[in-house]
Amino acid sequence: MTGAVRSVLAGAALAALVAPALAADGKAVFETVCVACHQEGGVGAPGLAPPLVDPELWSRLGDKAGAYVTGVLVAGLSGKIEAVGQTYVGVAMPSQEALSDEELVAVATYVLHDLNHLDVAIPAPPRADPPSHKALRAMRKGDAP
Picture (cartoon, rainbow, N blue to C red):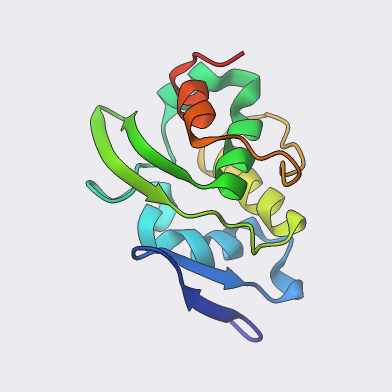
């Protein structure tokens, strides 16, 4: 990937500043930034990172799925979550705030539209007022408004 700058973040997470030419390519951003933990195709890594292909989660979130994904991308996520019948304790998804808004929207679109075949809106990343990890976990459970 020409022009990509890579750096290791917390845990085994990989963050990158993707070349402008790739900014609108959500799959390329995913493969550069997210695949190390969430694996090819977003299937997850038991004990490390939950699967992003999770029909029950996306059904529960409904039209809030886009806000959830952009919120997690900007704020990161830590704590305990349930995903596809497995409990993830001590989840430590780092914030990907180093990515541009265009890259964040592109990767959220890839996760929701391409991997999960959902037709939901992807809002602008909430940089000015990122959600708390507690709020994101509540949203994930279906407890948030």
